[in-house]
Length: 88
Image 1 (cartoon, rainbow, N blue to C red):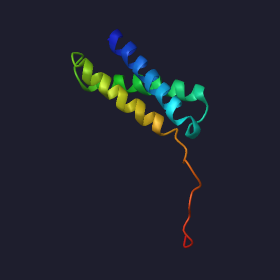
Image 2: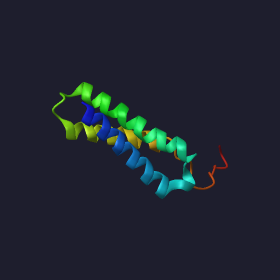
Image 3: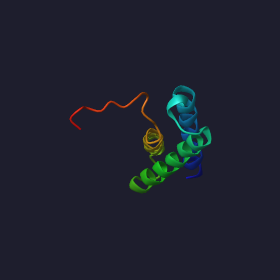
């Protein structure tokens, strides 16, 4: 279980680092992004570990990656100006 927690936290940190590197203009403060990635990954690993048996390490890490990416995607801001229709 310790391997799953450390692996998922490291995976979340790597995903957050990639997001900061590639999408820095659309994300809030770097420290928030670097904290959200591992937190989402740890939560995803916890949920996946609870749903599956402890023997499925790769699936648990996959669940951690999915939840980490989903949490990071909630931080994204629109890239340009929002367009509103004239009828709205």
